[in-house]
View 1 (cartoon, rainbow, N blue to C red):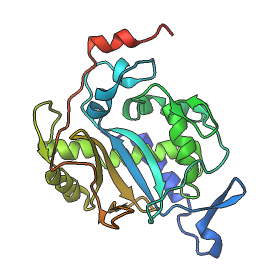
View 2: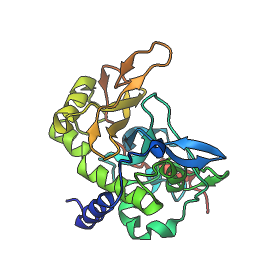
View 3: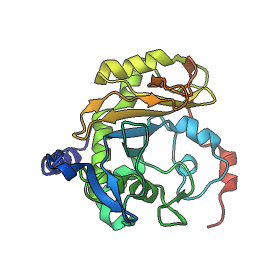
Length: 264
């Protein structure tokens, strides 16, 4: 069940945020390193399949959910909500705002469950390493203005879009379940999402396994088709790096991976 408090807060947040501006300067959202930063065209909700991502884990730490999660992964988790441009480029690190975990302390439980880190550290916009959430907020969240105006709203909005468009349930209902033996038709997975949400997703694979599934949204957070443009051929498509049949590998932390955990 979707947490009611999130949906209520999300509704109030969106209702109070001006999504359209008729003024000529509406396309300029902020100043980045002395340059005007163009406002986003749309959002891309990027989900990752832990069974694929965690298969590549070769080191562990306390923040890596591939290692410390109790029990198997059976659902997509959030990678991030990314502002994008229609020309295939995207903004990043749009202002000097640093991540502050205290701003999202009331969201930590759902974030740990639905938006876990599947690695040990991530780069930040201010140099050095930081948490996965810090990376996503500083690189992508800061570029979500003026639709999303602060750190708390960025994480809350992302959680609620994730809850509303439940890709895992859609695929499970269509018979696409985690398996280390089955291969599923890529077209069937795409069709299941299209039938549920009436838009075409974008997919990315690694070694024949589905790694990421992306849903795209207008600035008012209504769904739209995702497209990918090949810069060399100019061909537009919604899927890339995926074979005709793909796997949804099951993953459960094995004993040998915990031997890599350092003493800290």
